[in-house]
Length: 155
Image (cartoon, rainbow, N blue to C red; front, top):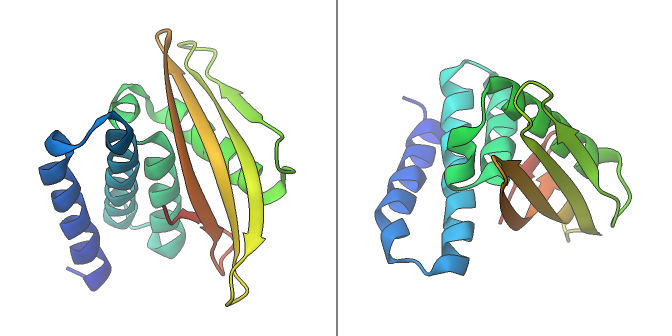
């Protein structure tokens, strides 16, 4: 087991253990962090290498909490593609949407602010909404562009 897999596993376990004690606002954040950890683990287990892990972390973090459990594989792919496109190429304030015509699930990602860290890494704050069965889940966070061009959730 690699160090990355162990670290992501520890994060997932910590998030699972602390979720029951969180208030509603914190549950959204914890769900996003848990989703990011789980997505990274899935990406690592699938043998996707660094890009697979980064994509899993991004998608898991964006989906967060329970809503991700209701998304099928096509939903997840559409959401991940929309998120990468929004974070990479969409101006701040512009929404990128996706919709699965097979089940009606949909979502949107809106980059809010772009900035550069002291080390030169580009980061973007964003909002993300997922609609499943008429229920809407919204999350907020920050993602940073990795050297391989993928975006990774950092908060």
